[in-house]
Amino acid sequence: MKIIIAGAGDVGSHLAKMLSNEYHDLTIIDNDEGRLGRVSESSDVITIFGSPTSITTLSQAGAAYADLFIAVSPAQEQDVNIISSLLAKKMGSTRVTARINNDEYLQNDNKILFTEMGIDLLFYPEKIASHEITDLLKQTGTSEFMDFSAGKLQLIVFRLDDGAPLIDKVLGDLTISSEEPLYRAVAIARDGQTLIPRRNTRFKEHDLVFVISKRAGVQEVMSYSGKDNINVRKLMIVGGGRIGEMVAKKLENSVDYIKLIELKKERCEILNERLSKTLVINGDARNTDLLIEEDVNDFDAFVAVTSSSETNILSCVMAKKMGVAKTIAEVENIDYIKLAESMGVDAVINKKLITASRIFRFTLSNKVQSIKCLNGSDAEVLEFIVNPNSLITRDKIRNLGFPKDAIIGGVIRGNHSYIALGDTEIKAYDRVVVFALPSALKKVNKFFL
Image (tube, rainbow, N blue to C red):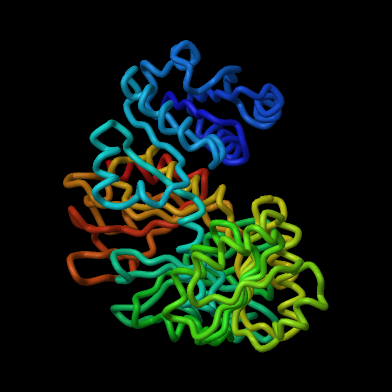
């Protein structure tokens, strides 16, 4: 696949690294030679110095015959992303996608307008991150959570901390032997590696466990983790940027009390005007005394979304030690994610992975409805719609030769959902949830073509 990435910032660099592992023909454009140099050191890409809005530069990059054009210049360069995407489409790129920072563009009528102009996907990483945070605050016992088909199946991720009932048990203890099980463990992340578990796989302390569950099985699954779901009535947010503001605004009518701490005084004034039910405090959350003064121990949940990963991790660790039950940190340095989890942060949000999930779908079958790159693991969870006569429909799962580094977690057929077993037969137009390691993605994709 011929892919052009316009923008070699954090998001563009991460995409280049991830997509180069898939053996695509990759070209990256940027007007900063330093950023291009760093990308070329870590990824197998062709780099082109120039403006993404230059027709000459786009021609040089091959926009006329690109299969996918991705405009991911930093959020403040939204216009550059839109213009370069429109130009690439007019020049011949098959699919184009652009990063934006304007919520207005995502309203239904406006999305249609952009589609008619030729942009296939608009994505707003900060908004997607805010939605993930609010979902995690509804399912506080999990470190990651994802709905499929309006909740007919759910991905639940939890860490086995000291005392968790599942520690030292084997997978068979988490698998119901009835004809219609409610859930299935599909992966374990352990010591930097992701395992597809077998029946005799034993769970260990600090494992990150990934489970596909029907709605009726969620409560039982969470009982294995030893973690209770907390009803969040009081929420503290550190960081008044776009994500912090969106989380506060979204939850103002469902949470009793929200306190937001922001370092910049001028930003506090803006937040006071925009948020009607949130108490905005001007202060530095790195200061333990400030957290004590603001009674952090009285809060049910603590969300840290400043521009500094270090600040977010450390403030969450402090909040946890002071008695807060649920902590969530935005961690943009991918190398820090495992560090944050090892230090006791309950859940981590990363905009690079969020963006990668949205875009990676375009490199796979057009029947991929959703894909999510998972924190704490190098794997992805995908939702396919099954094509008639595709390979996946030709026999029972156990007889298909499905890749060993992937696993089918569940199937949604009409209004019903099923946990997949070896004897399960998949039919045309089913929605199928698959958990796959990077080495299996191409092989899995072929089963659904």
